[in-house]
Amino acid sequence: MQQRTRNFATVVYPESAPPDWKAILERHCIPAFISPLHNKDLDSEGNIKKEHYHIVIFFEGCKTKEQAKEIFDTIGGVGVEIVKNARAYSRYLCHLDNKDKVKYNPDDVIALSGADYNTMISLSSDKYTAIGEMIEFCMANNMISYAALLLYAKKNRFDWFKVLCDSATLTIVQFLKSRDWELRKYERNDYENE
Image (cartoon, rainbow, N blue to C red; front, side, top):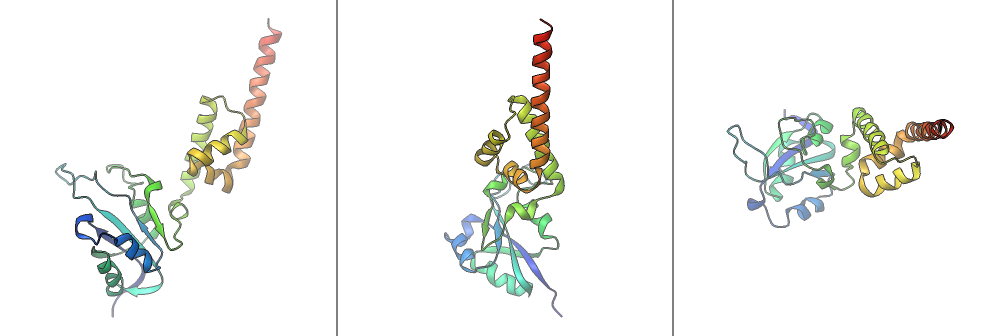
């Protein structure tokens, strides 16, 4: 009996794929992620590997490797890998958890047919990292306005914007209020000591 699962991955080499392979994949209407072009990966001897993309597809129901291969063959995919953990593989598209590998920008991942990359890769530890970065940013830039931070995040740091919208507003607002209070207290103390 053939093993059936929902998630599969392949590798696409640009020079051997159809020129419109991304559009072909999109026409299949299967949720999928296309990694950024991996053009800085090194082999075990330190040489740059051949440029490639990692592709992961997410079927609604269980499929066989052969069914996934039919899709991958249309885009020039090489091999079919069963994906046991969708989040871990999605994070691998940019080497987010691989310290020894070149990191790629998550903003460069292409999400197709309703797949949501940011939601898929989110870990609770990412939220705390983002909150820490926002606190450091506010301190370095003497920022005490939540509105200014939110607008900055919306324009420049969508990862922060998402964290602010989803769960961190109370923490950041309380930090900014407390920081404003401390700054005013020190200003009053300096004035009184003159």
